[in-house]
Amino acid sequence: ARAGEAGAEALDPIRLAGGVLLHPGFILPEKSPSELENPPTPFMTQETVDKFVMLALPVGTTSRDHPYTSPAAAVTAAEGAQLPPMLVMVAEEDMLRDAQVEYGEAMARAGKAVETVVSHGRGIGHVFYLNWFAVESHPVAAARARELVDAVKSFVDSH
Image 1 (spheres, one colour):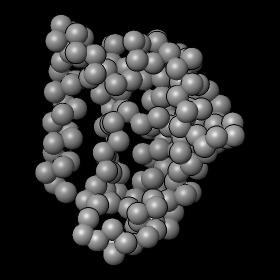
Image 2 (image 1 turned 120 degrees about the vertical axis):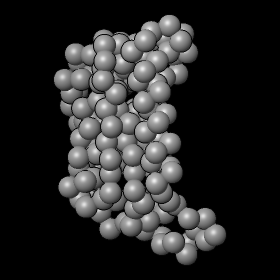
Image 3 (image 1 turned 180 degrees about the vertical axis):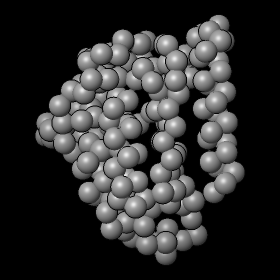
Image 4 (image 1 turned 180 degrees about the horizontal axis):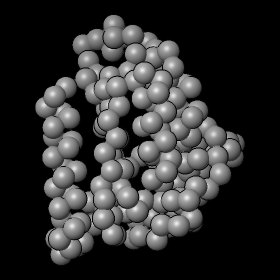
C-alpha cells in the first residue's frame, strides 16, 4: 500500500508487478471459527497465533484491529493505493483461514485485483508446504504443495 501511495516513480527503476501472499498472518478482531475449530499443526497453535500477532505489531499496540494484521484495517489503509494484482494462498485447515479469505474478499470488493486460492484437504494447515516430511509422505499434502507451486508460477508468469 505504501508503494502504491508513493507512485511508480518513487520506486524507479523497480516495478511491482504483483504480490503473492502465502498463508498471510491476518486475524480478525475476535477469534474466528477457523482459529477456534481447526486443529493445531507443528507450525501453528493458539499460542503461536497470539505470539506472532504481537510480534508483527508495532511496540505498544495491543489491538487485533491493526492494518498489519486486520483484513478490514489493511483494506482501509490501501483504499487510495494503486496496488498491483495479488494472489492470496490459503489452507483449508489454517487457523487463520477465515481472516485470509476475508482479506481477499474485502480487497476484491474495494476494486483491487485479488485472486484467492484455497488448498483443500484434511491436514492442510498453515504453511503445510514447509513440512517436508508431510509433503514427501502424505499424498494429499504432496498434491496440494504441487498445486500451490503451480498457482504461484502461473500468477508470476501472467504478471
